[in-house]
Amino acid sequence: MKKVFIPIIVLAICLGIYTPSQAQKLESLKKELASKMITQKAPEFSLKNLEGKTVKLSDLKGKVVVVDFWATWCGPCIQSFPGVKKTVDKYAQDKNVVFLFVATSEDPVDRELRLKKFNEKKKYGFNILIDDNDAASQAFGVNSIPMKFIIDGNGNVRFISSGFNGKTENTALELEAMVELTKSSK
Image (cartoon, rainbow, N blue to C red; front, side, top):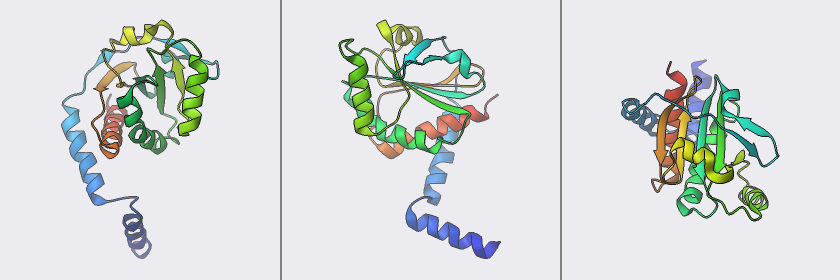
């Protein structure tokens, strides 16, 4: 077993898939963020996605839900997406983690077509929800975008993150740390 394990770790390090410093950074960030966890009931919402399906927060009970409020015209939102996409991809096979991208403050003229084109052009594959009349963003108290809410399986907001920190890797690491802490909280 040891003979197989060591070459796999060496290969992973060489390919950049895993670096000990990434794991150390993640653990350090989790320790830092643990003291910033909150417990605040998340407002219920029911929004349609780009496929016309209704998504209700209460239907996702038992899962960690990352709700990202954003807009196509928001530079920091767009800049944050490569890091967010890394995290979405990391949890793609985890059925207990859901990412929702709530398009808010969008011009209603051709909004759905514009959002579909954006998602297709960037190849994000995000589950984009449309916040008609900005009701969901108002209920959550969104005062700037991008703004992310990490919600636990009981429907409580555990973290709120706003803005873009300027680095793709830092965004991915911070979001992963918040998801992991939320998954392990009771």
